[in-house]
Image (cartoon, rainbow, N blue to C red; front, side, top):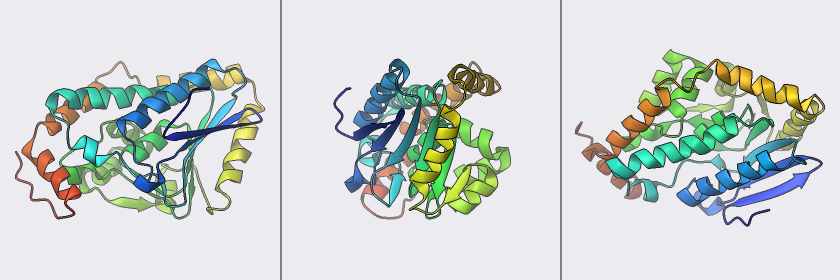
Amino acid sequence: MANYNNLLLESRDGILFITVNRPSKMNALNIETVKELHTAMQEVYDDDTVRGVILTGSGEKAFVAGADIAEIAELNEVNGRRFSERGQDVFSMIEESPKPVIAAVNGFALGGGCELAMACHIRVASDNAKFGQPEVNLGLIPGYGGTQRLTQLVGKGKAMELMMTGDLISAAEAKELGLANHVTTPEGLTSKCLEIMQKIISKAPLAVGMIVDCVNAWYDKEEHGYQTEANSFSRCCGSEDFKEGTSAFLEKRKPQFRGV
């Protein structure tokens, strides 16, 4: 097993627990963590003893509270595209895994964290969880597949509203919308995930993997949605509004957007 700086991996009876472990940063996804998620998922693909994955964040406050804004603030139109495409590739590995991946959403799942949860096959949330795609507050859009997966899960109208307002929603509303499969107490979160996972891994592994393939086939990734997202994310990174949005966030002030 590889060495990780920002992830904790623990195997229990064929179930691999992957924990994003940056509690001082609310488990925000920096570039290194995204790369480590790729490595961890490759281990999942390659290790026949792994039957399923439960993905969560360390601590009680956050699953993943977004991306690392200090890193994002350094993006431009050229490297912004690669930043988006890299995250899309890693999250597609999760979505396309032939082994079930359950997100145990234990707090804030914002921006890249919401996108990470949506890439998982099933989402179980604690009742204190919050979901949202607030990138518009930075002069940005979701760049790790969020414009596509949120629309798939909650429908066009609600996805438009959530992404254009940047509003956060509760775990209860997320379940009502279809963004979360189940809501439980923080204390019962792991046991609920284990209950579902143990039921799934008792079934035929080949059939489970084929269900993943068939369901994902409904949403044809050969279409242009993800590339349009990466292109648009890149354009945002070249805008003055993006510079203002990220600067305002880091300086803890309200942004003054000008539409350029």
